[in-house]
Image (cartoon, rainbow, N blue to C red; front, top):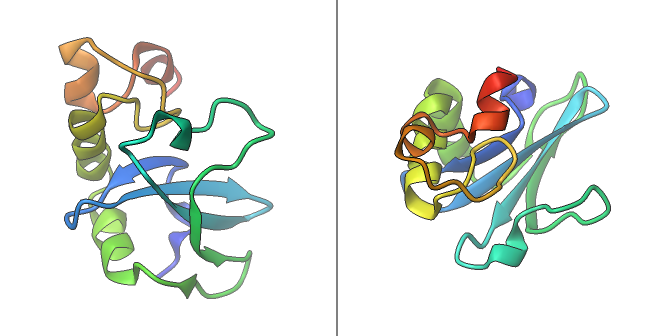
Length: 116
């Protein structure tokens, strides 16, 4: 499966893991995030939190773990982002804290929702 088309952001798997999809240079990296720790979410471009679990280079195949979970996310990315937002009360795009019920229901904070 080609995961390069997954939108960058945070996703909650049905197994309860939080995966962070990072787009770069036509490829994608996947990192597992500890969603119980606020330091696990990116706050600046210089820091890349989480544990690498896989990657896919431009024109290549995905190598790594969590393929079953990624396949579920690939088929229903909006559901996985909403599950993430409901679980940790953070935006599924940028990882910032959100509290408005409307934001939690859609999986995005107000700033990221404007840019969709």
